[in-house]
View 1 (tube, helix red, strand yellow):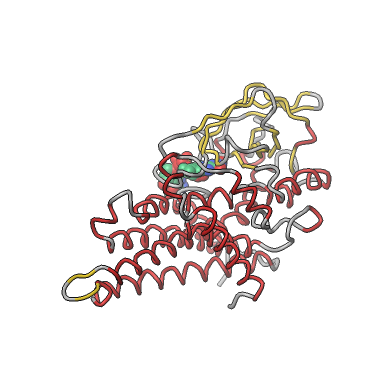
View 2: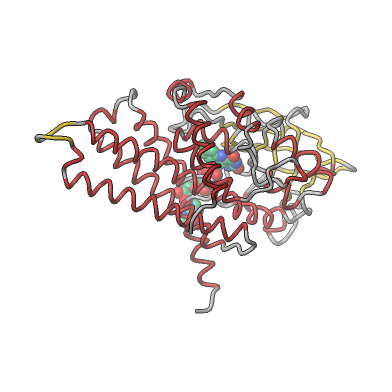
Length: 381
Ligand SMILES: Cc1cc2nc3c(=O)[nH]c(=O)nc-3n(C[C@H](O)[C@H](O)[C@H](O)COP(=O)(O)OP(=O)(O)OC[C@H]3O[C@@H](n4cnc5c(N)ncnc54)[C@H](O)[C@@H]3O)c2cc1C
């Protein structure tokens, strides 16, 4: 599989954008746990946000592969900053797939242009991997939903203009998979609050928040998809979004590998550069091979998705394997830096901290393995 000329140009443009906009500022953003959101606006102006949004709704009309390629490039330069770019449209997939024509016309152009950041709020203090445990309630009263509850670890919780809220609409439904729905919230609505979570281990330039809803009234027309179908919509949504999380893992691993190669070529020991030692070369070879394998997985999973042949097992393989690759490569790359790698001045320690998140969010590696196994066990060989 080879990228088209257009796809290669997109990668090059995204890389150049990231190098120019945040390569030199990333350390400071990480230390201060903040980001300059004007960079997100410029990313949108350059066409890097929500490229999968159809042209009719203000997007580039490209695919999830292109979205993932951009993600890999921005994460390669810096994962925390890159996350601000690639998460700004986290939720547009749901609106484009399940939203009404009016919702698509209203929200998607705002997301693609960078006018509005969107986030998706599923996780709660007591409900993570098992989303059937969510308690946030959206009670239908006349032509509104009244939302009460709280959500945990929400990316862009403090920056988002809109949030997709996964909430219980039918607590009595016997089938737990039919209790929830997805509701679009304008975060300016009274009763909504977002509290920034400080002290994350990695991707510290990315905003993460605890959000709460105190009698938040939302028009009933803000239901996305069908009432009671939230769980099923969510599973389809993850099949779209997990590809780009896989690309995050490849990006952080690629960035770490490049730092390691640059360091071992310069560092002298035992009569020459470290790169002359076979033990060091083996490490480089193993890191590069795993990265290439992880990249091939997400390319193929995204290609199939874009061509109407979604393979959920392959998506989960890509997500799980790229997370493991990210953690493995960042660890080995830091090792090759020796003591310097342990010091804040060196970027590799930040990548080491950043890599871990890929194994945790949007389906932990254990959840991905469960998806892979359940898909395979359904198949007849
Ligand atoms: C920086 C950051 C950003 C995030 N952004 C968002 C966001 O934007 N929106 C959102 O909704 N959520 C977000 N999350 C939440 C994230 O998706 C959850 O943390 C993740 O899904 C895991 O849920 P949990 O933390 O409740 O862990 P738990 O579900 O409690 O799991 C704990 C451990 O048990 C394992 N485990 C659970 N079930 C099984 C099983 N069946 N078999 C084997 N092992 C199992 C898990 O794999 C994990 O290792 C974010 C989290 C972080 C840290």
